[in-house]
Every structure is written in structure tokens, then in C-alpha cells.
Length: 119
Image: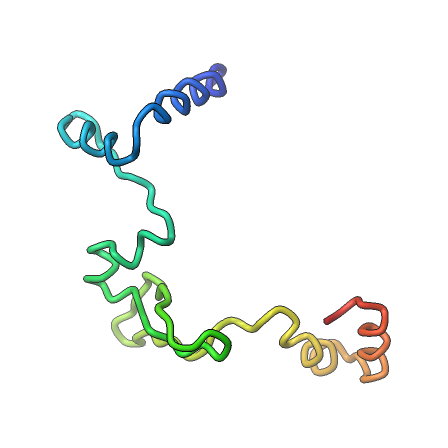
């Protein structure tokens, strides 16, 4: 624990001496080491487990059109998942939240917008 920073620096420097493909080839030949490459988001759509488990769904986004999205990996037997809508855009629900839930008036909303406090 005391030397963890130095150890990480040494390991980082060593791992940079090869590509990830070269490390995969080298590590696959050693049954004494349990390992897996950390994937990037761009790797996931072609991952065999992601594909086999239907974690990729098509969604028609209002701004960018039909595109592939990663579904949550949690699935329930009695309530199957569905992508009904995307998360709100930044500021999309601000007025509704302030007025309906927090009791602000429309005059308050205008004043906050004038001061660039809200979008």
C-alpha cells in the first residue's frame, strides 16, 4: 500500500511498451493470470455478450434520428425493459420543476432567465 504510486507508475510505463492487442496475445498464453481488457464505449456494440444479450437498442432520437443505444444490462422477468424516451435535455424540465414542484411564479422564471440563472 505504501508504494502503490511508484508501483502504478512502473506498471503504466511497462504497459505502454506494447499495444493492447500485443498484451492480449501475450496474456492469453498464460493460464496463471486472470485478466480482461477494459473496453471503451465504442467497443461495446461489437462485444459478443452485448449482442447476445440484446443490450443494443435502436432509438429514434428527435435531434439525431435513428441510432443505436446501449440498453441497461438489468432485466426483469415480469417487467421487460423498454426505451420509451431519452433523458431530458439540459434545462428541458426546469420551468415545470420550478413552477409545479417548487412554487415559483412565471415572473420568477422570467427574472431567473434574465439573470442567466436558468436556461
